[in-house]
Amino acid sequence: MSATATPRILPFGDQPCTLALNDYLIDCSRVCEPQSDIREQWHDRGLVVLTGTGMRHLGELQRWAELIFDDFTAYEGGSAPRYKWSDKVFGLDDAPPTIDLCFHNEGCYLPEYPRCFVIGSVKAPAEGGFTLVADNNAATDRLLETSVGKALMEKGVRYVRRMQDKCATNVLGYKSWQETFYTNDPQEAETSVRAKGWDFEWLNDGTLRTSYTVDAYEYHEELSKPLFFAGLASHAAFFDQWSPYNVLADEERPLNMTLGDGQPFTNAQIATIYAAHNANSLALDWRRADLAMLDNLRWVHARPAYQLRDGEERVMGVTMGMMKPRQGPSPAMARW
Image 1 (cartoon, helix red, strand yellow):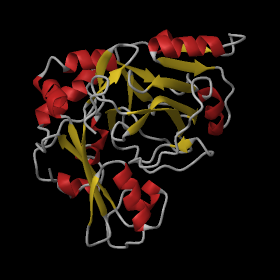
Image 2 (cartoon, one colour):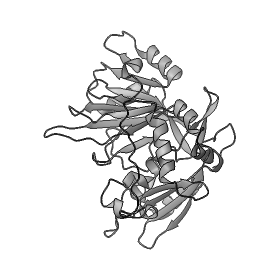
Image 3 (cartoon, one colour):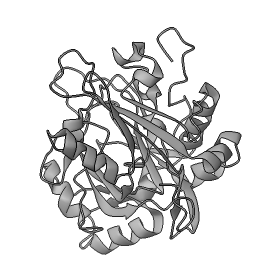
């Protein structure tokens, strides 16, 4: 797609969220020992939203996350630019507030992904700026009734990434290969790429282009079923509202994805995937909530566009861990 092509649908429709925040909320100021309640709810329902924590700095997300896991990821190989609040807590808002960031599972494009994803806020605007989460179990059931859901089960997805050289001055960049793999040595970057099983090539301008095919569903052991695990945040549509990337063809944008056989997603297929998640979502209002702990298979997250008034800030952070190797839609069937 280019600026002159048929416009794609935006990720979020006009329908209201169907799930209620209060159903997942734990007020830590009213519970003497919330730790057991937090662990039980995360394992039973996959989503815990906390308020009344007294959190003042996003580095504190780590101690809450440690109630669930202790193997934090360094985000090596991750596709989004990230700064750090602490050794294990990363900043958000790498994308402009004027664009819609659609539903996705964190790290679904990597050979090892975080099963637990923790997100929090210490400053929020008076209106908007919330995070959406959606029940991926219900969305998967809906998606598998459609032709694109069945095609994704059969073919998987192919991810294509273009990571510029951070030293290049005439290349439109998003995230450099140096930032992605934590090295300035091209040979070390290649070693990381090969270890992940990705195809790669170096372009004449120093850009590292990678591509790889993976399953679009991942088996959830506790639910004993596969869940959709290929959110479209890695599709070129992510850049449709983002100048100057939106004048580029899909294959020239920093991120893109196709069906596993290389066929591009149609606009109708993209709309179908968006709709499956929109039908089963709730809004995390950061004026009420301090942080949320997600089972990264059972729940997906998103961020609608928002506006800041003079003097307002939206300050967010994430940490993640409980690392799991991809296994595909059933045990021991990974396409990787």
